[in-house]
Length: 444
Image 1 (cartoon, one colour):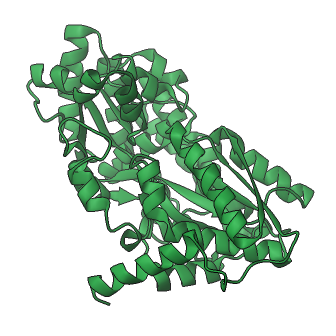
Image 2 (image 1 turned 180 degrees about the vertical axis):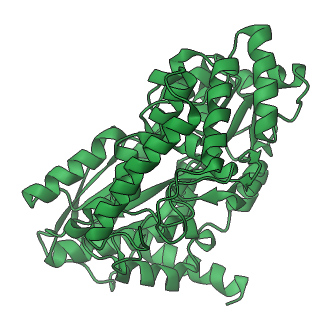
């Protein structure tokens, strides 16, 4: 399909979904859907989204309600609603709920339709919504947020890195020099929360380690993982403070905005917050793609995963399916109103993205500050890389095994070899359990 035809098709889909004609099918009177999702880090997005759902509901004869909560509440809320057999129609999470697959609707049809309409989906989005061991799409992801470097230009230039760190050797050497000269640390969490978990995995991947291999076999206990843990412990001891052991999901954002971190790994929400407060300070923040390690460069992603519990039926289920596909068709609006925080899983759905990255519509200085994300997108991987996210990966995260290992070594409570070996044994047990249920592939 040529780009011209694709663009025309997307325009027609957008018109049809945003402003339906009188001939468009409407749902029966009394059809209702309810949405539960996280309070967005770009506050104006939630206002736009609530207006969008109101207009969509009016156009489709559907009553739509939206509840926004802190993202940390979503996994337990979903589990509770599945157990109760009632609750919201669509729940959007920033991490994979693969362990709840048996209580979720199979969304294979939606995923198939989306790929037919919008083209190829990025693999890291598929990998957090599809479970190969059972051949089921338990979720649908139209967008994601991408981790990348956010650094203080003046501090790094003074340390000899005018373009910021390019690899993990730079991060250690430059971060240490800045910390010794100014007391301002690197800000990578080593804490039981999602940003720390993703950042820690990025380092492990870049050293050649991982929790699992591509086939779903537990492989955490490896020399490569040991090397990555040693690196992170050294980085904490020489270029960070003990505060990172207790960080929350907002801590790295707050540190960057307050000028209390020289470098963080985060999507663009921290930068956008600073931009609203002090544009000159925001101009002093540079972006870098995922840093390079001995085994390459890997950028972690927060996929936005929509699921429909198994208790949703009838016209409510049909309306939910249409809502998700229509939102994907309008993902240019999503990306724009999230101020480029929400990136598209279906690149063809947002043909404007390249021009927005080259010339930020929200007034960045320089205007092409976001252009580096083109490289960052090429380095994006999913949370369970190099395999698919699955219930075992979800449990390793729920037990926060990885930041605990790094903290033990950084605090001198165990050697890297000891901590990784113990964690590897526990991870192998977790994989063996879920494999016995048929929800993880591969072999022990």
